[in-house]
Length: 247
Image (tube, rainbow, N blue to C red; front, side, top):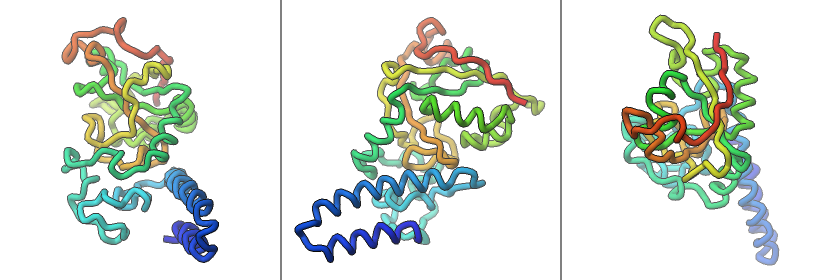
């Protein structure tokens, strides 16, 4: 609650200063709310777990089934519960246009995605629903540098379950990077959490539990691999960005 107090003080000050200055104050307040959400996302980096019920308060209204904004009023089975992912609302229902525009602007220089090489070759660069989670290229570069080729650390930074990047014998899988230019980011949106690729660690607001921004793009039918769409690498969007060796 301490992070909210500066914002509440601004609301109080805007009222006390009179209507003559309220327009300017409220505009500033909106900016501060957006900055607060960004700050919360940055502060959770490095934490072992960031529960959905601890999502930034500005995202709470209309999100939980009981519509409460109080941190202690989480209801099991709420809409960020993975067992009820089909009930999750569209981001536009609980995020402001300014928030969404600012978030998607992070992808103005393109996006990138990590793939397990065997999965990419067999199934293509998208899920069966044609959606693919992506990261701003500069953010993924930062994550890869921070991971330092450590498999466990990379899984944690990307919100993957431990073992996701290892084979049955526990050996690291071969992974590679694929880059998507701005004009290949078809249907770029803030994730709704209903996507096939949304796992148990998904949170509302467009950030991984570690604070890394994420988005979703839509791939064409030809980009879901031989078992789903019949396409091949020549028809897939994105360019090869190199292998990343894990240990």
